[in-house]
Each structure stands twice: as structure tokens, then as C-alpha cells.
Length: 322
Length: 263
Image 1 (cartoon, each protein chain N blue to C red):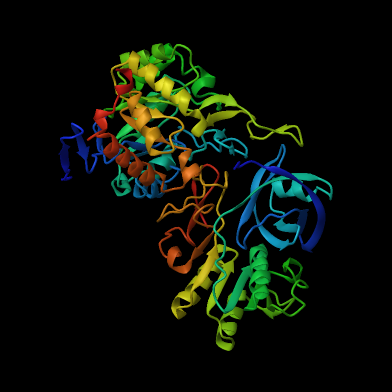
Image 2 (image 1 turned 90 degrees about the vertical axis):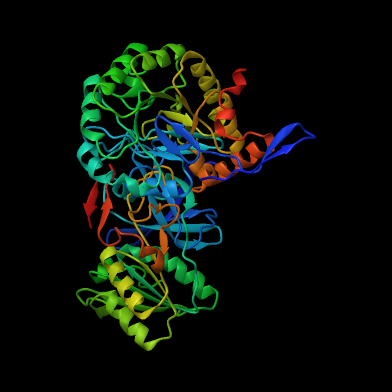
């Protein structure tokens, strides 16, 4: 049991929290902190997830798995320019059969593991849910929002409200696991898509995927830099967009929201919670601050909560709406 | 800080051995021995290469022709441009007063730079390098100045000792005062060197090669089983004690999709 010392500061008329409680419960997952390793950052192997959990992640998400193996796009697949990261990995993964072997015995990981599955259509999503998920995952995420892989996500229209509804409902019908739908920040009627997911039975929204697509061009050779030419934008510069999207989606739906986009430090996480997120995705910060970024953000968030008198995460969720 | 390629012109191309060339660039890479750069050839792709020479104002990468990317590189002449990004990865520590450097095939490339740097600091360095035959052997003239002791081995005896460089290492360990071993080459060979050093309690460092995509710790392609360490960030150089925890060492690796394949 976590012991919390709470001292009443009669002069300030405010509690001083000596040790903030960072634990959260989301979709039945008990997490020691609200920080979730976002899908696509590492997560290719079980031991890679374990490495991130050991570095403080409250939960971890695997790199998305498709029915058949995929090599992904030609390199370069990810680059940065200052605070912007751009990627077009192209869903490289070893396919359903090999991934089942890879992600077995997930108890060793030391944190709840969220699966991520992709499919060409609702039927394939349902197949993936039925055949891949049994075996220790805590939840499943559906990235209907990848901006750079033909046949999937945004490029296949999976981010539209009708498609989101169909895919979510199909997956819900084939698994007992909580279903998280990951949305794109580049949709105008964001609330409609979130509502479609909620109506289809989604247990949570992950808001969200990378923005864009955008591109980098090498000025010396006049060639696009990414192998796929275009890629999704992430990194610290994305935070304002992500915050606004989380804020918007939280107005539209009642199910919990995972806020993902540009979080690299404790106060970023706090802002995401205040916008309405119940948990916070962390991705590119693994590059910007190192593998121990989860521990560092958790410590910073804890200090921030102590300074501002928040005893638990819930006390911050959505308060920017009030 | 940006992690994106910067264009460099190839200054000079040198044949080192059959299908192995050094590509020289001007500029300061400020790499430490064991570090690598990601090389981008527009329209072809991006791959990691270890830095093998570094002098004031210039540096080189020693590359073996193994596939489509390196074939494209080998077709390039001085004046041609490639993008370089880095340097990345944890370098060799440079520890030890008397070091044996054991390189197999083009694995000798990063060790040769380490030999330059360590011998430049007045340390006793013995470079043991092996290849199948004489025409595949790297740097036969590079260390003729004598600052670095060299031992050559070929499987067929066409140059230097006949046999593997691991046998040469055993002899060097008997004869000379060696307090540190550095190793880079085919993994089967590194496993043997690992065993030799482990039995004798000699500290050692090994440079691992895995399928790499991004080079700076984001994509997870080069994560190692047992620890989850990324070869591009926590490595490519690992100590003997660290490698004990890497369960895939000498056993398997992963391809570009993440599928396991036996070594």
C-alpha cells in the first residue's frame, strides 16, 4: 500500500501533498502512473516493452501487427528537425503468427501491455481481434489514423465516422478486451469520429496519432528525405495541436481519453490531463530525453502535483474545462 | 539538434580488399571509435556504417559490397554526394594498458580506428585481423609504421597465420600482457572470443550488428532479446558482462519486419 502523508497548511488553507499518488485505472488496467508507451516507438519485441516498463512506463503498447508480415517503407523511416519528428515506418511487423510467439508470457513485462492491430477492413480487424488478442494483453488499440501507409488508416478512409463505427463494432464483437480507438489530429469533425467510436462500444479514445502528413526535402539534392516521401509529424512541437484535440474530444464523448502528442516533461503531462485525458501517451520523447523518460516525467509530474496540491491524477483530469 | 542527413561529397575512394572500399569525406565527424553514421543515398535508402578512419578535417567509412545499397554506393565516384547522419551509438571505452583488438572480415573497420586512437595515447595495441583469404583481408599496409602490432590470419593460409583469428588471440594472450580485449566481426567469432575472455576473466567489449532502421533509438528494429537494449543507443558496443544478459547473442537476430532468424 502506498503511504501518503498529507499535511494541512492552515496558513495557506491548502493541503500540501508530500507524496502524490500517480496511479490510475484505465479500461480495467491498473497503472502505477498515467504514462503509456505509444505504439510504434520501440515495442517490436516483448523485451523492448519490458525495457520501457523497467524505465518507468505505466503501460506499454506494442508496435502494430498485421495479418501478414510487412517489411515497411524504405529508409529513412524517421527523422527530426528540431522539435518536429517525422516518420513513415509503414507498419513493418512480422505478421500475426510470429507476433503471437513474440508477445507471449506478457506477465514478465511488468506493466499492462496494450495490443495494436491493423487491418484492411472491418472484417480483417475482426479476424485479428479473434486470432491475435487471446494471451495476456490488457487492452487493444485500433490505429484508424495512420497518415502514411497505403491500405490502412487515413489513407484507407478508416478515420471517417462510418468506417470507425464499423471497425470498432466488428472488433468489439470479437474480443472481450477493452478497445481503444486511436484518432488522427487532422480531422475536421473530430467529435463526430469520437462519437462514432463511442457509439460502436469503444472503451477509450487515444487522441491521437501523428499529424500531417508532412515532408522533409534535402535542399542539396532536391530529393524528399523520407523513403515514403511523406510522413506523420510528432515531437514536442505537436503538443498544442494534441492538447486542443484532447480538449475537443473530451467535450464530445464520455469514455476516457488517452492524450498523446508532444509530451516530453511533467508539466506537459499535467496539461494533457487538464485538457481531459485520463492517461498520457509518450512517444517521441524517448528520443528527445532518452529511454528513462518515463521515470523522469513521472518524477516531474509528482513534484508538480506536490507543488500545486494535487493528491491524485484524477484531481487534474479535465479541470481546464471548468 | 536535428536527426536528418547532411550531404557530403565523396573525396576519395580506396580499394581495401575484394569488394571492400573506403569512402573518404572531408569534414569533422567527431566520432569516437565504435560509433557509426547513417548513410542516405537518395532514391536507394539508408544504412548504418562504422567510422574506420578519422583525421583532422577528414574521415572515412570502410564498406563491404553486400547488397543493393552498397552496390549503388560502389558505383559512385569522387564528387558524388551522399547524406550522413550521426555519429550515433556508444563507442568503445578505450580502457586497458595493453589491448588486443580482434576483428573478423570488415568488422576490423571500427577496430582499426580504435587502434589509431589507443596507440596515439601511448597504449600497447595488438590488432588481430582475420579473413577467409588474403584478398579479403583489410588494412594490410595501414599499420606498417609499427605503432600498432599486427597479427594477420587467413582461413587458407594465403597471408599471415593459417587459421582463425581466435587461435591468434590465444597465442597473443599467452605471450603478451593483455588486460583488455575489443572485438568486432561475425557473431560466431565473437561468441568464441567471448568464451575465451570469459574463461580467463579478461574484460572485453564487443560491437554488435543488427538490422537498423532509424539509428537513433526510436524504431525498435535493433532491440536485443534478454534486455531490450537498442544496438543503436545502448550499443553497438557492449561489455562482456552486459552481453551475458543478451539472450540472443550468438543465437538469433531479426529481419526488417521484426521476424526472428537464426544466426
